[in-house]
Image 1: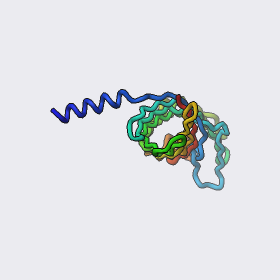
Image 2 (image 1 turned 45 degrees about the vertical axis):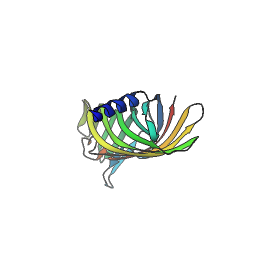
Image 3 (image 1 turned 90 degrees about the vertical axis):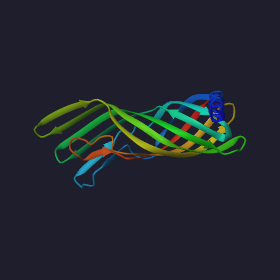
Image 4 (image 1 turned 60 degrees about the horizontal axis):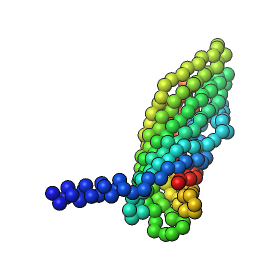
Length: 197
């Protein structure tokens, strides 16, 4: 009975903690795609590199917290080998769920976070042009999961500003292109700036 009372009290205390809302935006530090090592193959990614999305955090006692983000990016590439040219474009939605710890300082609080992420690649459109013709294909969502590690600073002025470096290792590639020359990278690093209220 005593244990049940302690659990109920802990749950009530957690629910009474402040919930913050905000946005995270940033830039990838690594490429979304990797290409095979082949001197006859060239590929280039679209330079529109950005990551953006909403963020919510439950702040717990003792500097702890739980954060959930929904981060969006657009991805595109074009590659060629010989007379074959392949193109692809898609939208990526990443959902990291992180446990966070803030070190006990006043205005600027360093933090570390870790957790897991779920990523879904939607609206994938691929085309392959060869000497004999052009083929197009579209597909539904392709999903992968991974683990996340991050570190940054929580700067509390009127709002909370949180610059962060975040690393994600995906359990599998998001996709492999039709000519088997480009695949989604399993290692992802990015710089993010969070602004929360």
